[in-house]
Image 1: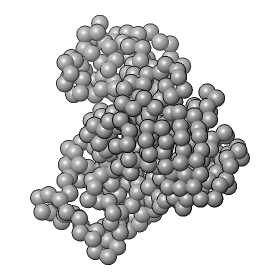
Image 2: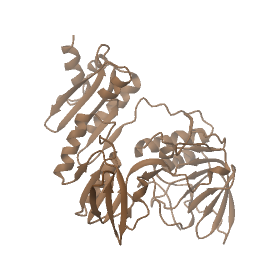
Image 3: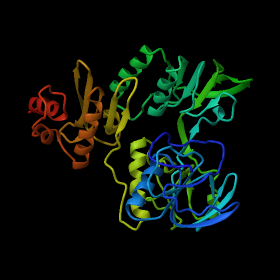
Image 4: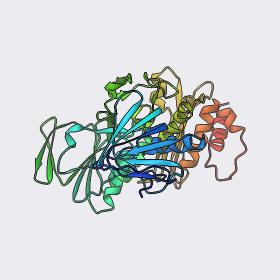
Length: 410
């Protein structure tokens, strides 16, 4: 018996197709060959969004079938698991293809298949690897987000020579640039070669390696492994969504704030929508969309989504940096506080003190992110934060920094 469940390993894994009929509760009838099963909720994809949706639907008393080409090892009690690939037959049923063929009829389906990673020229080669695949030798990682940095740092564990190519001028474009520079300094100290504003023009396969050429004709080099980590579209090509009314816009499944698509019975959650990308945010988005699928009012309207980085050093950012705030008409300023173990940065409106964003690098990063998310959701100002009695005396909290800076501005 194959169990599915809780360990979040990937935003999307593309393993070879294999159908294994299984259940954590032991109540799924095994039929040789083709079989049909009815379920209340069909969830497609066992990444963070799918696991969050499955657990929430079970908690709300629904019958759930979860399908993915690869299943996590830990079990979600009560979830029936099928390992294979899904194609929608129509708006009411889907076909699960692997060693056998299964048809599942559903009341509601939630698509949680994650994002396809680019650039596409790095896919389908002997040297191509997924972000969580083992990689050794000379490794090229392409992307500008936290997944690219995570992948580059993981490859270092196998003593690989790592090149991180960023397709944009800035790495971590949603981070405060000063904090981002500190992260890049740590990447360099870990012997990761960082190349910004990179466009790959050509990739030539040479046995098990890949020769990469940039758009200006520069040969970047020969690599034993190439890893695409830049989300470019939802992973939807294999789903046969044309048999339904689900709309695809610029490669992503179009959803409203409740996760509904243009097809009443089919919803979507997580990175496949282009709405969220961080694993924790995808997990919560899956939970929210599950509420909708189960008939409860629920809407995705966060003031900000926390961006968390664990290596090469802990880092976080929530909300707008100064340039992004000014670009939408805010008169924003940034205050910073350096300490022995890192830095905290806060962005606020000059006149009102309204908090617009904050983050940190160092051991306090996650704690600062947690506090910032609450403050942004509440619409707090520096004056509000300054009135909060701190739980510590080292000044490494939003309230203490706000207290010092707000008092000085008066």
